[in-house]
Length: 156
Image (cartoon, rainbow, N blue to C red):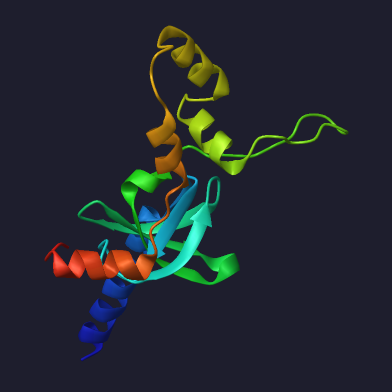
């Protein structure tokens, strides 16, 4: 009986050490990332995180990563495409310099796309109409409507 207890305690300790070894810190690399209750786009949104927020990860399942933000009491799943292993820090310059970039501009700049790149592209393609792209950037889908759409379409 004593051997069973010792074996049980050893397994417990190994599990705790293993789970701690897999924990890592990642950064949100999108303007707005949704934390879901389950590892699926069908999962209920439990929180929204913004570009640069830090999360603690513990496991991965089919492209989804389990995350925690202890300071905010957030636990759930985020799609791996919304996270980066790079530490993203938002800083302004020296004292007296105001930050004038929006969160969206910072997220795009982090991916190598900024106002300068956009202007260069427009200069090379003067006849291109950006009306629909501008509209698309402003379009937001209500999470409840998206949930209904996914369920009606039999999507996961």
